[in-house]
Length: 253
Image (cartoon, rainbow, N blue to C red):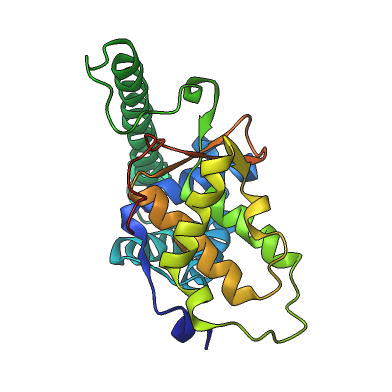
C-alpha cells in the first residue's frame, strides 16, 4: 500500500553498489575486513535489501548477485573439508576473493574521494572572473561524506520513533516528492544547514516520512544538496550545494 501511494522509486545504483553496502556493514559492525564473520554480514546484508525495498529503493541485479555470492561463501564455510581434495586446496579461504575485491574497491574509492576533494579546492581557489549563479559550500573539507546506507540507518531510527498509531488524512499534493524537494530547499534557503533528523520533526505518518526521504535522495542525486557528518556515526548535516543570486527565479523542479 505504501509503495503504491509513493508512486516514485529511486534506483540504488545511482548512489551506491553492493561493495559499498558490504564496506558499510563491516564498518558499522566493527569487524576485521581480513576476517569477515560471513554469517553475520550475510544476515545483515539480506536484511538491508529487505529494508531498502520497503523504502521504495529499487534493488539492482548486482545486489542480488552479491547476496547469492555471500550465501554461497557461507555454505562453503559450513561444509566440512573434503580430505580427498589436494592439500593446496584445503588452505583456501572461501572469503579470500571477496576480501581482495573489497580491498581493491576501497582503495579506488578513497583515491576517487581524494581527487574529488582536490577538485573542489581547486574550484574555490581558481574561480571564474565572473560570479556564477551558484557557488559551492565553503566549509565542506572539515566534514565527512555521508553514504546512502548511513541515511538508511538514520531513517530507520526516525521510523522506530514513529509508530504511526493514528491514520492521518494527507492531501495528495503534500505527499509528492517534488513538493517535498521544494520544501527542503526552502528550509535551506533560510538556514545554512539543518540536521537530517529535523527534516522529519512533526511528521507522524510513515508514508510522509518516506516521501521526504526519497525527496532528499533526489536532491542529492541532482547535486542540489550535500550531506556530511562531523564524525563517524554522528549527526548528519544537510547543506544546500548552492545559493541563488538575489533576483534570480526560484528553481523549478
